[in-house]
Amino acid sequence: MVWTGWVNETRLAARSIAAYATDWVNPTLRLGVTGLSRSGKTVFITALVHGLLTASRWPVFEPQAQGRIARVRLEPQPDDGIPRFPYEDHLATLTGPREWPEGTKRISEIRLAIDFASNAGFMRGTEKTLTLDIVDYPGEWLLDLPLLAQSYSEWSRRSIEAARRPPRAALAEEWLTATDEVEPFGKGGEAEARRLADKFTRYLKSCRDERVSLSTLPPGRFLLPGEMEGSPALTFAPLDLAGREPAGDSLAALMEKRFESYKRLVVMPFYANHFATLDRQVVLVDALAALNAGPAALADLELALADVLTAFRPGSNSILSSMLARRIDRILFAATKADHLHQTSHDRLEALLKRLTDRAIRRAEFAGARVEPVALASLRATRETTVTRRGQSLPCIVGTPMPGEQAGGETFDGSREVAVFPGELPADPTGLFAGPDAFRGEDYRFVRFLPPKADPTQALPHIRLDRAVEFLIGDRLA
Ligand SMILES: Nc1nc2c(ncn2[C@@H]2O[C@H](COP(=O)(O)OP(=O)(O)O)[C@@H](O)[C@H]2O)c(=O)[nH]1
Ligand SMILES: [Mg+2]
Image (tube, rainbow, N blue to C red; front, top):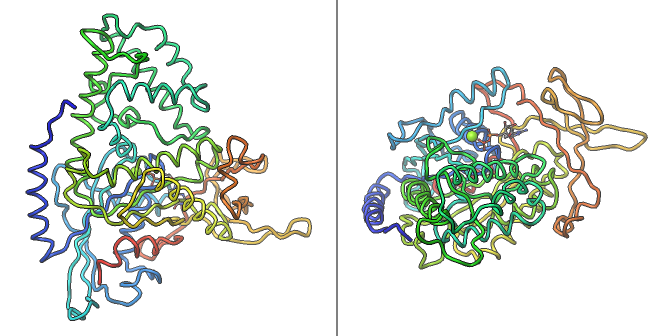
């Protein structure tokens, strides 16, 4: 490891002492919202903030249901160096032209102050304020954290091994061929590094394609480079080192140097400045996209969840754990977009997610924080109905499919509502993990809908969002 951690560590320790002192008087909860690109972070945060600001009737969110929340207001965020989450713009886009927000590619933050009446012991009835910071960051960055514990040769070996197996093998072919053609221990130059990095990046991007929908694809900035685009720290790729270590001025040595730069310049700062300050975390999972793509995507999603858990609770003597200023004590895994299913399948989606996280917990030997699964829709785009067809009644959903969406041989133009039979998830998810043929010809394909017609001054439709909020902040409003 090139990086020496103590400068950052002391700073973090100082910060956590300060945080502790102010926490006592004026408690602050920093909630991280993450998930891979398109998992639903922007919509989730918009719906969450809106629900709190408009005091939506959320039966399962106790402080609200008990009428103890006096006032919720937006406040200036604490970190001047981070963009503010553009809540107002997103709400306007969703409810005005009924468009889904544009994808975001970086971190952002928003702060709420919640005035509430305590119901805890001798504090009962006293007015308190909880400051809630919501931090939105790409899940791709989170999946980079395991890199900190890997050397370049180790990472190379793992990446190449994974790329040689289906379903990656077909997508990786061009990059792997190019890799086989270079001499890792020959003198390497910029042009070669760039060529391999380009092909490697293209391969990673194709893995995210919705037909494949794989989840474990570090380095995350290769997918979401942001302001780092084109810099040397992003211009490297794995090489087949055949067990040797990089040395001298070889191509392998150049790649190794850049891999270390990536860790130092990209992964570490994110970890120290943002991640290490979080108290609670919600991880949004597009389990339906994985179902759409098939058993391999589902298996990969499980691996990604295990990596996520390792990031939250690194083993006791790792470099990561020494830097954690706070301990994340609750993690919510949320399967988003449940409104693509009839309610008969909501519990089933939750059961599938539970199964995924249980196995990930075991794989990551994870213990300590409370982990809960929920299937939700932050903004419900459909309602339910029953359609009778040939004497059989089918549980269907009604919504306006987005222009270009297809179902039952029909292509929609985005102008009218239709009822679709979304299919049903199996009652027992076990079968979905039974290997490459696990889906037994079952084709899980879900139509995408426009956001619902909604009045932004009123409560917005959702599924189980209140349960998520209760788990994430309910106990801190006691
Ligand atoms: N039907 C439905 N679609 C959703 C919901 N949340 C997100 N989506 C869809 O998922 C896409 C990605 O959501 P977004 O919040 O932008 O994801 P992000 O990249 O994680 O911020 C949106 O454009 C919508 O098409 C939801 O609650 N219901
Ligand atoms: Mg977003």
